[in-house]
Amino acid sequence: MSDALLQAIVALPFGLVVGSFMTVAVHRLPRGESVVSPRSRCPSCGTEIGARDNIPVLSWLLLRGRCRRCGERISVEYPLLELTTAGLVVLAAIQHPNPWRAVLVGGLLALMPGIALIDLRHRIIPNRLTYPALPLFLAIVVLAWLVGDAADPARGLFGVLLYGGILFLVAIVSRGMGMGDVKLAALIGLVLGSLGLRYVGVAAAAAVVLGGLGGLAALAMGRSRKSAIPFGPYLAAGAVVAGLWGAPLAAWYIGRFL
Image (cartoon, rainbow, N blue to C red):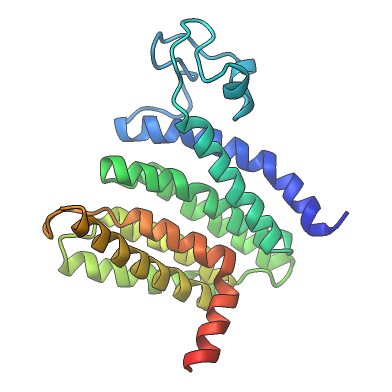
């Protein structure tokens, strides 16, 4: 069995667990509720969901998308978010043979679908996600640096200043950028910057390109130029592109244009 396949197998349950947590975060954090207690409940009848009915994806399939007690439908959003999160973690494990890099990129990408969904719905990126994530990922970066050359804390902090700093300036001069976007950019800059600043460049470029395409699509659908369009999903998408394909994309750009 190859190392990449072994990492992917190990990464899958981790991704599903994080995805399950993010389904809770998506629904509770915008409402100011705790993600720890109370335990998950059916949104229709309020019955507490037992452990056997709380297995990511599998429980939803076995129950055919319905509550065991009241029989009301449970949104397909739950398993889709779990699967998307797990898929990104597995891809990160495959794309990054170094286990520390796989943990850093996989952990970052695991947050992106949930954050994008929250921002799309509520126009916020909760501090209760970004604030704990920043010191947590910094600690992992430092550990990775201490045991080898998988990551560099100095580059990571420079990535924070570079990506977060640029968006901070944009937020100061523009009304279309929120501080939640700045904090998310700082988190992305920390993790991807610790791997190499080219990853930050790809993340920023992808976010701008995808944001521009999204803006054009919104205008084509009749949205006003003055309508607020959340930028968090594009930051998240840029992080995914850079985390999975940052090195080859940067090499292609440098070889073609520089």
